[in-house]
Structures are given as structure tokens and as C-alpha cells.
Amino acid sequence: MGRIVGRFVRVEPRRRARAFVLGLLSELPRKNCWTLAEHAGDATPYGLQHLLSRAKWDADAVRDDIRSFVVEHLRHEDTVLVMDETGDLKKGTHTVGVQRQYTGTAGRIENSQVAVYLAFSTPLGHAAIDRELYVPRSWTENTARCRAAGKPDTVRFTTKPALAARMISRALDAGVPASWVAGDEVYGGNPHLRTELERRGTGYVLAVGRDHQIATHAGKFRADALVKKLPKRAWQKLSAGVGAKGHRFYDWALADIVDDRPGHHHLLMRRNRRIGELAFYRCYSATQRPLSTLVQVAGRRWTVEETFQSGKGLAGLDEHQVRRWTSWHRWVTLAMLAHAFLAVVRADEDARRPRTDGLIPLTCNEIQRLFNALIVRLVHDTSHRLDWSHWRRHHQARSQASHYQRQAAQA
Image (tube, rainbow, N blue to C red; front, side, top):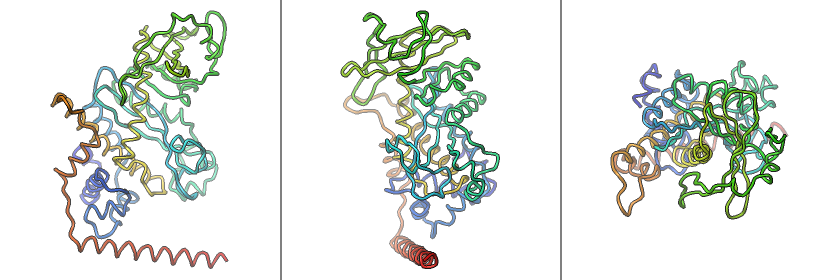
């Protein structure tokens, strides 16, 4: 918390931010302003709601502090920036950015809010260092709706690849040491993002669809058609990294792409050794890199999925019940800070204490349990619990009465 203390002008929001992060790190089954305030010992949730909505502090400045904190502790020569989006399922139509759209969280089209994240991934660990909320055209074309949700008038419709490019530029301009960028098909199929990375001399391994057109010395082919022209000796068995069940072995092949621009351009092909499923990656590097390096970068893309899983499961990244632009950015930023703390402590423990036979290394889940049991140890008396039970029932009764009155007025 000392990293971000200078971002708060007054001591009250500074203390509430600390209580907020401690609540996100707790083992509460649900994390919202009500449960976090009760955990902090407050009498009502109004203080934490004020922290998210009206208090004077800059979430973007705190985001920059998180980035420097993560880079300082997880710095490694083998660094990959990984971009991906995730969706939070929502009800209603008033939450900023919400609409019916595809989200990988549900695997289908649902009423949801989607955001793009940038993760800092090294062999020491991984954590999110930036975020951008995706605001669809249905919102940006409705000025009254945007103003009601607190979205600034300067924020225009921006595609997900453009949001990713903005975050990558921010990171590289801030001196983040990254030689590679990885992402899925949403980003690999965007030529503007690829061109921007090439202009900066930053290598990338970006997934593309099987219908992606590739220019070779033998002509132009779809990616899946090019596979059929490869000889058997072109495939090599390599590991894309260690997973929960050991090394993830696939068959890999590489084909040169004819491109007038400087650098080395390739199509990386992956084949599942058991079922034969294919995947394709468009690759660029300023200098020639071996196949094994490109495979390792491609395998690192999955760390952003692990970041989402632990960020949501341990730090409440997706449990916000806020509607407005400012509140969303503040909640997500503090959740990123909570998860970054767990990731850094995990890396520090691995460095300090070598692995013991018969034990796996400490995980973020176990660090969270130990932190709450040994360090925090908050205990509230019976009176505090009963007061909160009374407050919740009173607030819910008022909401119920207001809902019934609204229904009667509409009828």
C-alpha cells in the first residue's frame, strides 16, 4: 500500500483503500461494498462506495504504480506481454458498456460487460498491469446513456485490438522490458496491431484463424491449406510449457511468410498429437529466432487465462456491482493490486525457499489463506454482526418498497 499512498490527498480514502484491498484479499464468499465494509468493521458501506465513486484519487496513476511494482519484482529477460479480454455477466442495461455480446466467460452471447487486459508474464510469475473497458457502439452512439453512466465525452468507440495497442504502447513507453507480445485470434487477425508492433521492433506470436491468408514463395494459401503441403519431417515435437499435468507436448512446424517489410515473418503451426486439432500463429521478430523460442512464446499466452482465474477467484476482479465508468475503473484497479500482491509474494517465496521434496511450491491460493490466518486475523464481535444484519434487512426493505411503488406508478 505504500506504493500508492501518494495518490490519495486525504487520509480517509487512503485508509479505506487499504481496508478495501484487505477485503479483496480475504476469503469472503462474495465481495461487494456491503461485504467488504462489514469485513473492515465499518457500520455502513457508504465509506467504501464513496471511495469508488466520489473520492479524489486517480485510478490510472495507481495502475502505473501497480505496473512498476509488478515489473520490479517479476522482471526477467524472458518477458512476454499477453493481451486478452474477459467478460463479466450482468443483468439490466444501465451498467456502463453492457450489452448482449459474445464472452468467453460463458462461451456464448450473453448480457455482459467486456474489458481488455494486459498481463506481464515471466517464468517468475504473471499479473495484470493494465486494463481498458470495451464500450460498444450501442453506447458511444447514445450520448445521454453514456453521460448517465459517467463515461467521459472524450472516450470514443475503440476496437479491442486498438485498446490492446494502446495498453502495449503505454507499457513500452514506460520502459517495461518486453521483447514479445502474445494474443489470440482477435488480435492476430488485426493488421494495424501487427504493423504497430513491427514499427516498434517488438516481436509477436499472435494466433490467427485457419482461413488466414499467407503469402509464400509458392503462392498465396489459406493457413489450413498450407499444412497439407508440408512434409512429415517439417513437424517437431516440442513442449509449449509446463501445465497442471506436466509438459504440454504438441507437434510444431514453421513456414516462412513473404513480406516486403523488414524483419522475419513466419506462420507457426501447432498440431495436437492425440486428436490432430490444428492451431495457427502469425509470428514476427526483428532478428531470426529458433522454432523453440516461438513455441515458448505461444505457450505463454495461457498465463493470461490463469491471471483471470486467480484474479476473479481470489481478488474479486469480476464481483463488482458498480454501474458507472469511474467506479468500474477504481474497483478493477484495486483488484489488480490485490492480485499483484499475491503474485509477487509467491515469486518471492519461490526465490527465498527452494522446493521441498513432497511439497509443491506455494500457490496464490495458499498464500491468501496463510495471509488471512497469520497476518490479518480480523475478529468482529456479535454486536457488529447483528448491526449489519439489521442494516441489510432495512436497506432491502426500502429497495423492495421503492420497487413496488415504481411498478404501481407504471401500471
